[in-house]
Length: 263
Image (tube, rainbow, N blue to C red; front, side, top):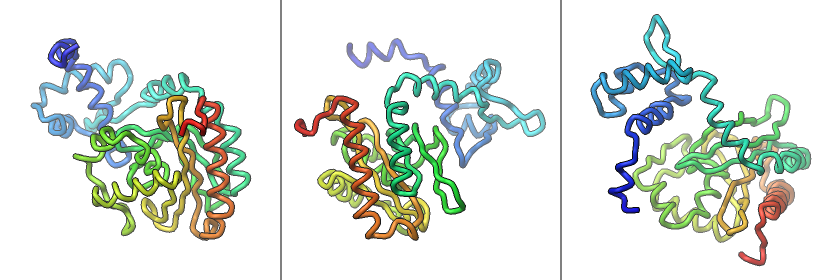
């Protein structure tokens, strides 16, 4: 079907409604009608009906005093509906817990969505030094070990679509912000088959990640373990964390039907 013919079936209202929901994040938990209209590049009358509809079906709430909108917990139903179709989070949970117990660090499962990683599984640790995340959390792929491993194994065309036009936001002085340098790093990560980051999203935090492949050989998800640099010394990473992360990733890839003989 030609792209022109496909466009005839697009619902602009649905597209814009979804774009509005995606505007809300940790940095912008609330938005006004004017701010939403500005982000859409339209007049205020265009998103007004969309906001009213999203509010009436329970996905948005408007504060009566400030008139600002925010997401409601109902939006989680959309994410959990998708997660419930996946077998991987359920299969991986005992392995994430094993990885956590053997490294003493929190372990996570994540997938790539555009230029962000989305966490779909977690085995948290306890204590003041614990580095834990919530299911559904999104983090920038270019500044995280799991994000970089997922980017590294994307087809070249797909990787270019993700990176070009994206802003590589700096979070610390170690964050990679130049696309040409990031591409070189991703090539090295692809060759070695794992990713290690240190203080690129948060200072003092180190992470180790490895890819999980599906039957076709395409990267499906990433498993990573993360801790403070006081625990994750160079020696500990090389002798403990990295081998165990790679072992878990290999086992989970096997569950997904991937065979190393195909690589």
